[in-house]
Image (cartoon, rainbow, N blue to C red; front, side, top):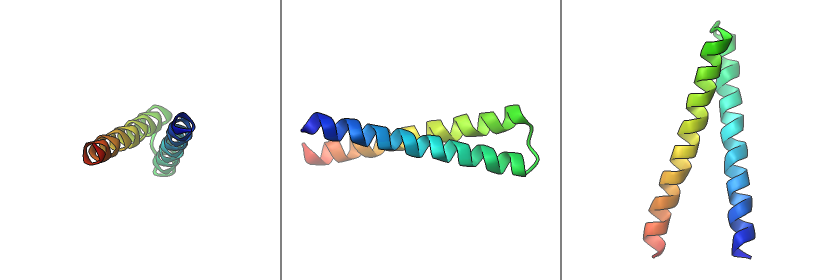
Length: 65
């Protein structure tokens, strides 16, 4: 049961990160950025969301144990 919860949570975080990256790319394109610049913004946002999720997970794991 724990593995299912971990896998579903991981999938949800990845989906949220992809959506945040796509939103950042769309906003960058609407602002007039070139496609490579928008892609860089999307990648940066994706990495930031994944990093934030890892930091929150580490903090919660430290509290639980």
